Image (cartoon, rainbow, N blue to C red; front, side):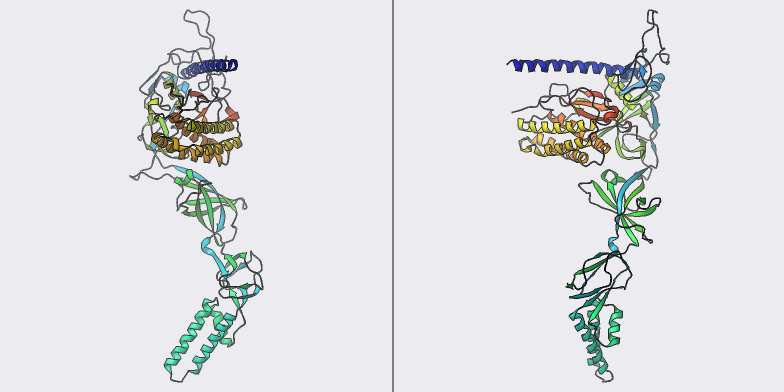
Length: 613
């Protein structure tokens, strides 16, 4: 009883401490972001020591970071977390107003927030797609020498692989009773025609000539060249051994038989590959397939030939994606007259792909890549409606082309969009109780589903695996993140979906494919940067899962945001602890980020508890 009371008391104290931490953090975030937009009415920065309203002693100045308001310094400098310039906390009222998703900033406030804009325009944009691959045989130029009749290989003229051969070169000396009999049949047919010359028996003569042609065709089908058949007729005697000739030129890449071996019809003896033209098979990642198509010129280099550059054209893109590597093969046909390119060589290729035109044949509509704030499946752009007035617009983006995004819907040519300071604008709107475009109201959430205890335990394992991935990435440990991804895949399949009602089953099945896909991407990532990119996606998936089913009995999942992740595009993540543990920067900026939602599954309505039977 005493132990239970102590544990309950401890939980209450921890709950109170957590609440205090969240309140203090919220106040500091609001103060730091407000300072990023406010200055004196005169438009000048506040003086270093400013008199109070009573005209007395000057106020002390405190400098903070607009992105990390927990940083407090007595003098100017740079933020120790993100290296941004610190701004003063003190200052007069600025001209900042927010209503209906827009904000108005004075000129001085815009300078302090470092707001930059760029026009929405139509332009030809290209993207540099880099791929790896290797040289392979041209499958259309590979020939195989097989035994066309049963017999004994008395001699192999090519006794090791790698030997170049020309069309018509002798490859094998074959003893075959069938070939000897076929030669005798030809010679007897030729003699019969000769005997009938001048006899006047034209019908018999025609029959004999047809027999000769049939004997010649038989030998030809058994692998003898026309010259060899003519030699048999000229010689007048059958050869007990017959040479098999190379059907094409190239290099012997495989030797399947040895001298003295008895072979049957179809037994392989040699494989010959013509290397005057080769295939380069490149691995095109799933995300790059939108840019890769047949007919594109490709430049590539080979590790074995430093300094050399080669060119080719994509002739074929595999219609099937490899389920493990998430790549498709792009085949390039390359002339290789000197034989420098050898099958098996590794290559690095570059394709300069251009974004396609719209239905009217115009260049695509694009915005700088720093303009959209991408949050899961949503993308938000702040548009400058007039000097100093900015409004958020949700847009539909196409693929990214270098420094630009292709815009499908939501913007028009000529509009000005914010390319720098957009996250600060969104944060300032939230500070003034305006609607955030990046974090829409809770009304947009999917309905909450109550599930039985057995399912709740399975969902808890999903969250535990996700938190293991987060723990690994925040500590720059890709191996731990990979193990967490494997755990997540196992936890997903272990959930007993037969216990769901119809609505819960539909909701879970709608989320399952995306979580599996992104977890597999983390598990198979070649480096930690790729794992972090996939983690940003799976974070949105798990956030949606928490919104639909709650976060279980282990406690709330807190949602954080880092505005500096992925070249300033920003990204969210979930964690159980109240102190920032940034998975996108790791040790480089471990404490960079801000709390945006204290309970990802609770929605602020006490709905964080999951139902149980």
